[in-house]
Length: 198
Image 1 (tube, helix red, strand yellow):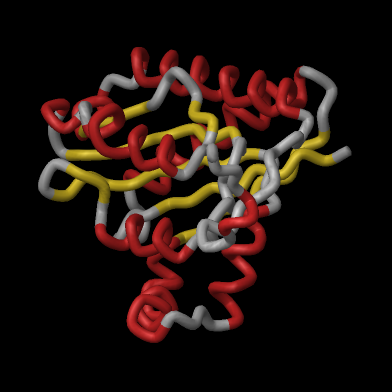
Image 2: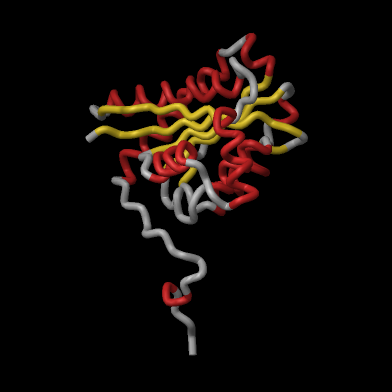
């Protein structure tokens, strides 16, 4: 069985530090899964390539064919690596637009490794104060270790390397333990899915 990791990079430039971090996190996770005897397929999604489709989806409610395919691949992934740059103390607008486009239940029980990049370590709490609550709301299963990379981390990457490896191993353990036994998606407007006390 091949394990599929979908990598979401919300960097705006090419190249971007968000893409660099996303690549390194997915490599660490894939290596840990391969060491456990698993076959791994990694697919990287550059969200900036879907910015126009996301804007159309936001204002019309309809995703184009390309965006629909990406949303489907995220919904069927064994794991997701999600990395956003930090703007004004939180994840980027492009990142949020993509998350808002995901169908309800897409990430239920899905193992997710969170990452963020910024110019200063002062923004590192974005993982705990913005990204983790967002993915908890989406009912994803996030790794204990999230990875924030500030500009200075790339100059002396020793500690960053260690965090990346630890996070990759945690994601691999979640994937191996999940068995893709994800709860069924619930339509929030279908009252028959709920029981009410009388």
